[in-house]
Image (tube, rainbow, N blue to C red; front, side, top):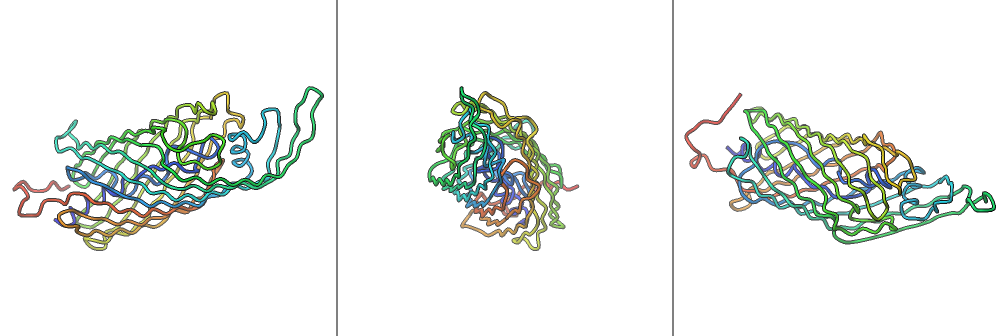
Length: 350
């Protein structure tokens, strides 16, 4: 039964959090953080309260297109300036994330329901350096324009609040889930700053996933597909297009406590950006990432503890910063019943 405890705990810990850092859409920022879901994402959990704490670090950079979009967003390129930008943008973000989840014992639509609320606190340091060249439109004609920009912003504070509701179903080694989540834009945000913790607008995200997990062999494979609809940023009159994201994880339990494997994601913006504040055009973005993971299960009194370390190296980026990121997760959840307390009814197997 200890391996069944592992299923429950890892499933909770792998459904991690969604900080808002430089990643896509308006000026390089989106609601969904690729890598949010991971291994065992669709596996049912133990009823009751659970909690997870995550340290997240990312280091990303981008070239002229993203840097120009950020200068326009922050108001550093006037409306009457037709400009090109030879520049680099760099961002380093450190976040602490807390997730409180309640798993309901009573079935909903034949599945297991859970509700979560995620809070974020952290620091973001973003810098931009390069040369802006172009022509400034005036009543007397176009005037050549050139300047060198070197800008750096650092902020520390709270991010947006993120509620989430999910349903999961189990059928032997096959597990299914659906979820809906969104962004409540109460975090630290300033439209004239390069660095923010909040994203400045609301969003709704929904999707579904599947996990294959065989406790006898320890084989596991998970995938979650979702879509984000973004509300308009009223500070900039800019609305991001619809985003698609696919997170996946594959792992092997080497023992009842140790898990190793790979994680990855594909992120692509499907719809063009719009709004009166959009001066960069469609600006659809994409990125992919892949990396290793390792997990370890251990008892915490009468509860179950779980540590997971995973990291991603990004590639195939367009119109967005890319680089690398690492997640360190500590989760604690109710332990599964001991064999003596289990009902007589046998486990369902395929």
